[in-house]
Length: 187
Image (cartoon, rainbow, N blue to C red):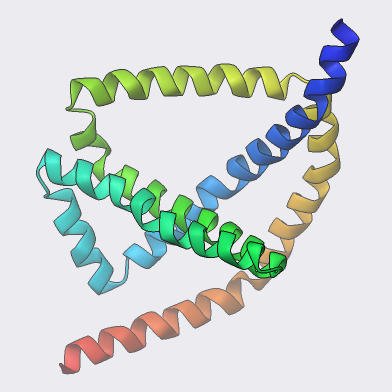
């Protein structure tokens, strides 16, 4: 019986391990990217408005990305149903990355107000505790350890490549940001 259970659950553990690895690796990077975009003057003003929202407004705003992404995911399903699988999957992956970045930034901005709702604080504590249990179970599995050992060299190589390219990218970012500030100053 145990062997059957392991055989049935192995693919799900493998998929969950991939998702957890990607989420762990992307969450911080996506938050940094969203924070960098938020440092642009127009977005900084929007973020200041978000921080000053009343708690009900913060809750409504936090729920918006989920509602906005539903039509995007339906569009992806439309493409998949019309045999444009790559386009549909690309839309789903793009929406997931953009949605995660947006939700991460919005949560960072609205978390103090959201936690003033008793039910939200209660749910947040339970979700964080449940997530920790699931992560611990998956991270202790042989599948996760094997996958982690195989993917860490790729992640490290990517980070090294990105660090070498950082000068080029930061120069471009600075040029765009300076140009934007000049346009705003002239207006």
